[in-house]
Length: 161
Image 1 (cartoon, helix red, strand yellow):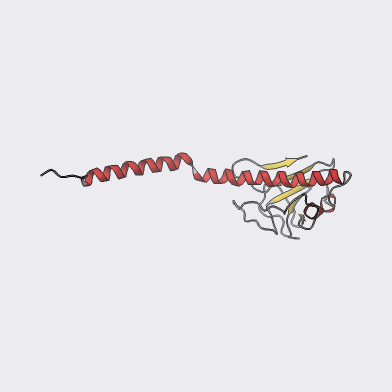
Image 2 (cartoon, one colour; image 1 turned 90 degrees about the horizontal axis):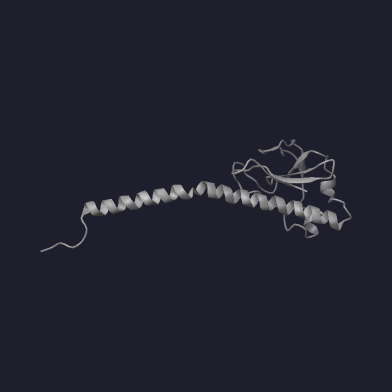
């Protein structure tokens, strides 16, 4: 009488082939890099949103920056967040311990230019409302730069206008 079905060795070979294909697909898709790219994309979007909000506010107010931004020392990087000290957290740029700027109560938020102050996705650093993982710099020539404190897939993330 003939036997129907698979032998144990046939099943093991099929399972091994499926396992090898799964590992190959996992390595090819490289999920860690995809997650890093996604976090970097969010950082780019957030930096552009803050910069655009500040610039639109400036245009709407006769060339004047929001009070929090105009009060910054020129050519100095400031961590965006509600903290008043400890602002020199892990960041790609050098930030002084007390170089913090709180935009949460600024005209950017109350005027509807920015829905809320963005918080960087956690990568190597851990970010929250006190230290958002974003920094701002107003140059002596009036150029405003907003950047992310960490970048995982690129060397740096910053936008200027």
